Length: 113
Image (cartoon, rainbow, N blue to C red; front, side, top):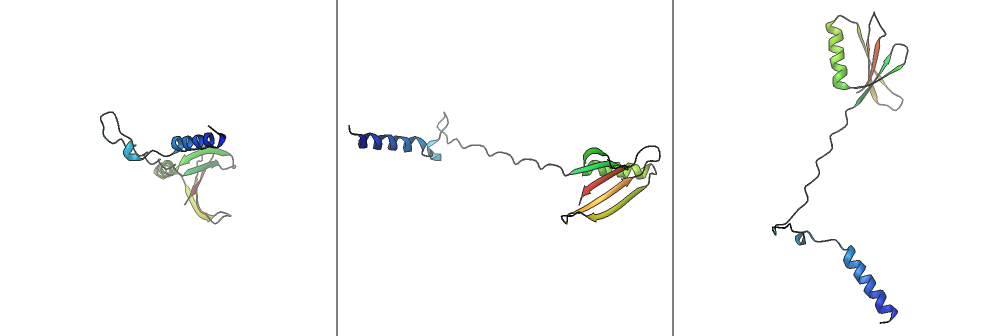
């Protein structure tokens, strides 16, 4: 066998190994066509809400739902709730909410709108 024939056999064998397997050829042990299960769609990440104190120190992140609950509770307990709607430097609307706490530091939430 010459080099050209050997190279042709190697190329043909490689192509056969790397070729996609047709779906009809994939069968489970019972002879039924085995199709892969589609992957479930990933859950969307909740939009983070950044929280600060009235000195500008970062306290952490929360979710919009949790912040809405905090706002409702603050209003229920008679705390002052101030709210502003602004636009950041990239043109994204933001909702700023300050929950005044006379006994401790205020909580300021930056909520993407």
